[in-house]
Image: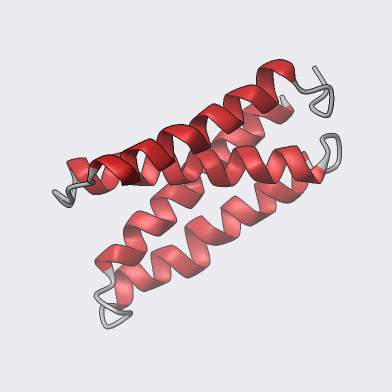
Length: 110
């Protein structure tokens, strides 16, 4: 159940970051309200719940690394942003780090 909560926290953070892009520098009120009151609040609340049972280091690495990868995909698909090869390699390395934590690290309880 804790991993499901973490997954929802990651999704909420990605939605908040996507909505932040839509605020046009916080000039548009509705995306701003959605970002601040909704998604970021939910993401941080859910992240805090996972920290009751999982260690902070790996959880934060998984949360932030997954968020980076997902928001990159959203940027490319939704906003038509193009990533160059070094940026993509860097993101692949971040995802690889998350996989190593999940699969091989004893710091992450199973």
